[in-house]
Image (cartoon, rainbow, N blue to C red; front, side, top):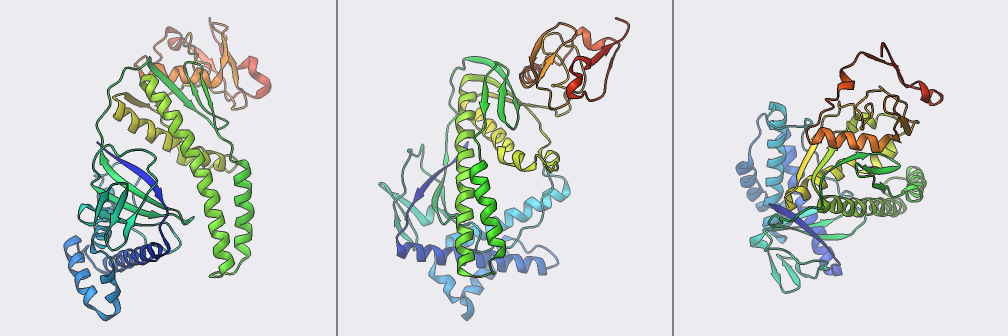
Length: 394
């Protein structure tokens, strides 16, 4: 399986100029090719775009394309071809998931990247040589497991530089302490596990407050001004601090869960529908539920674990995890539930996590209590905790 290893590096002033020229050439090749594709009735394809690039280099207006390596320019065309193929497969139904749109034009103020294949880079001890850029020295926070097949030079919106290597890694087989675990995701408490453990989400309030203040300042500043550009970089740095804090938390939590459990069960959340709630949309977006699911799935494949996702329609918060009695929907403000059948009082999220684990391992709520004739009320109010269920003919 393939994985990415990313390292930060600090280029010299001359290298920054060379990288800026390279990013500009890659962006121009992408935008020119995309404009040509949109003007054509049929998609020209990679071979025709590559031939047109060769002709473009000979023109007087594009002579400066020869000053950079040709490999990142060709890779830009390959990425555009992949984007169009994914769009076509999404329209035809061959690609699963949400439908994709057409590729978009690249902007100078967005994150910039350029990909080098084996023919355009090499590892020289602790340094990396890039064609027509020179030798850069990344900060090796960890060793590469194998020889990289490609490297991507990235400059983010906060003007940080990274090298992203694509390497081949082998799955690691290790024994787990626990057989299975169910995880219920939330906002204040990010994850509640079926074994009773809880993971509190980091707070982003202070950084988010600064972002809002600077965004109001940015809206008042004239476009294309130097002060506006400085404010934009400050906002990007704050966003990166939030993203780095979230990524560090998600990586540590997902690694701990995958190392300790053989079967990891999550619930398929309708995040796109949940963010439509104007009161909770910002808090939900900051949690990174989808990123956590992706990390758990990738690390489960790496460590030989089993990863499962149950349906979003499973009533995990409406059923007692001890006896299987179904009490129906309850208001979100009710955090503790008392079962009228077995008399067990338990935390709402912990009960849902246990039910998620049961559904994941195949015990799909086949208790005899779910087959009885019972009536459930509508959504309970906070002051009606004692009237959650009303059984008939018991």
